[in-house]
Image (cartoon, rainbow, N blue to C red):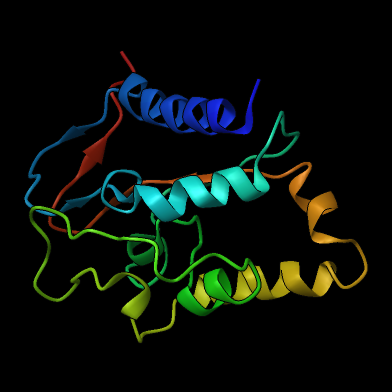
Length: 158
């Protein structure tokens, strides 16, 4: 299987997982799906780091407004994505059709820090001083979906 095929498979699998949970939104004015509007950097991340099977999945239930919502990369604080992960900051990030006025999407132009993403990638960067980054990503994967307080997400477990 080629890297592009694997990338498409991982993206498709993630979207199917979201749908299979039968998420229903009681008020969907501000639902962010960075796999859609930030698909270019997301796919670049998958192609670069997530090839083949993984033993571990970090699943972020609420990506930060200044991280993955901006870059499309899980836990994707901008300086970590462009620095440590080395992704191209010129990759296009669109704006969602509807967004909360206090949470606009500026893509790689976002100047705010996502503290949790900065801490996570900082820890991984420190670990990669001992274990190289390819070894780390040989066992790791992450995905996320974002919804603000203005909506309630309920999995249909029936």
